[in-house]
Length: 264
Image (cartoon, rainbow, N blue to C red; front, top):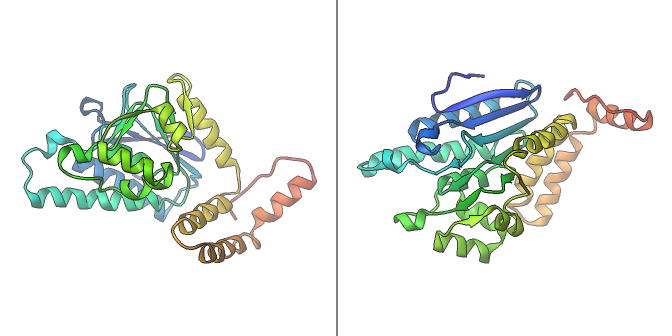
């Protein structure tokens, strides 16, 4: 996997966990074209080869901002064609993020506005610092969410709440985000990453094929009717039956020890 990116930083703080840091603090970690390309490449690489990774954590550089969305200074003066070219890169990046085979946890260390909020919504789930704030501000700029916001937000907070958030463009707190179902846990700024990594470690110790298949099943079952969703779940389930990990899990349980899953 490449590590020489211009706008993001990759680290492996734990053996099976990748930390992706949005790294443009001088521009509030806002997304320019290069960040779109960098993120697209990371998640393309992960789709092809996980290199032993079992979980991904995404956060922003600094203490105040996760991601301010699209870089409006960069976009100022763009032609229609330039704007749409850039957005096409963001569209591909969003698809690759959602298709990441392993869970992606968003560690929201500050403001997540506009496209930054949409990026967070595309993660599997979120932990947020107490001071974090969220908003889908696109309508206040003469556009609308275009990176999955109108699809992902209703799934997270319900349709009527999502309509209010999107139509007003008004920001809301981490506490509200947790109460409405957008955020799984609110943490102090000091403990955010420790709590995220604790959860990432727990995920990484589970059977990796099982986690990947469960993620794939939920991605389908939440988009189709229950009958089709259940049929897909059964197909995903049966993938586990002949694995070594399934045998190890049952054997470890009976031997009263911690299982050692190999992803086979």
